Image 1 (cartoon, rainbow, N blue to C red):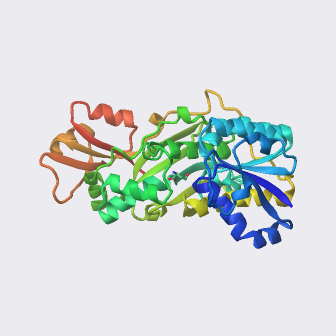
Image 2 (cartoon, protein in one colour):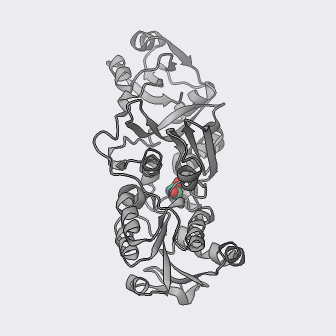
Image 3 (tube, rainbow, N blue to C red):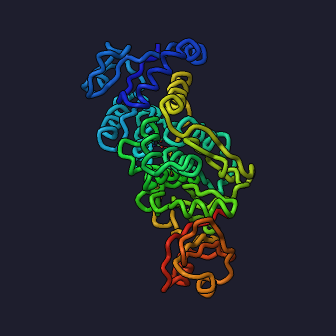
Length: 404
Ligand code: HSE
C-alpha cells in the first residue's frame, strides 16, 4: 500500500482526493498497488467531508510518519508551501505539486534537494492543468533541440477573452464566472496581469533550454489594457487577441522569454483555443511543430495530472529519472527588444499621420469607431523600441505584437 498526504484541501487538493477515491481500482491496477490518502493537511475544518478522519493541522505529523512515502503539495504560493516541500524532501518523501509559483521560483533548488535525498519532485500539473506537457517535453521530445515554446498558458484570461468576445460580457462579469468555476488564482491579479503565465513559461523554458529562467527577469504584460475596440479591429482583420507566453532560442543560444497579448491569425492553431483551454506549441529541430491542447485549469483536470505523477512514483518506486536543469547566468536571457515583429497600432490621429510615422501599414476598420481614431498592422517587422520611437509625438491608444 502506497500512503500519501495531501497538503491543502482547496480546489486542486480536494480534486486529488476525489480522483484517488473514485478511480481507486483502476489506479491500483495500473500501479500494481493501492494508493491511499493517509492525511489531508489544512488549517480549516471540514466536518462534513468524507475524508473526515484524515484531516490534520500539524505538518510534523506527516513529516514524522515513515508510512507516508509521497506528499502532494496543493497549498500554492511560495512561503508555507516551500517550507513544507523542503521538509518533506529532507525527510525522504517524494513530493508532487501543481504549484507553478513554487516550481518557477524555487524549482532548481527543490529538484536538486530531491536528487540529493534520492526522491522525486514532480510537477506535471504546474503547467497547462490537465494537459500532459512536462513529461512529453522532457521525455518524448528529448531528442530535439527546442527552438521555441509558445502557448496560451492561463485558463482564466483565455476564458475572460473568450466570454468578452463571444458573449459580450464585461471584463468583471467574465472574471467572476472564471472565479466561480475555480479557474482563477486566490488573488486573480496573478492571472490578469500575466504573472501566472509568466511562471509557466519560465518552467517550460527551464526544461526546454536547460537553464534556470528567473520569472522576475521576464517581461510580463497581462490583459488589463485590452479593450473591446482592439478585439473588434482584430476580428475585422481575421485575427484573435490571445495572451501568449513565449520562449525562443536565439541564434547565439540565449533565450528570449516574455508574456504579452498578441494578435493571432484566425488560421493559426492557437486561435481556436477558447474558454479555459490552454495549448502549448513546441518547435523542435527534428520534430517540427507539435501542439498540446486541453483544459488548463479546474479541479479534476489538474488533479488528473497530479495523480498521474503520484502513480508514476508509486509504479517506479521513485526510481524514475529526475527532472532538473542548470543554474542560469547573465547570458541566459536576452531582452524582447531583440525580437522584431509586426505590430497592431491604434492611435488618436488620422491615417496619413500614422503612415508618415510608421511607414506602410494595413489599415483596419470597425463599426462605431471613435472619431479621429486609426488602427492598423505594420507591414514591416520591427522591434518595439524602433516602433515606439517612430510613434513619438502621437497619442498611442494600443500597441500589440502580431504573432508571425
Ligand atoms: N489560475 C490558473 C489559470 C490556474 O487560470 O490558468 C491553473 O494554473
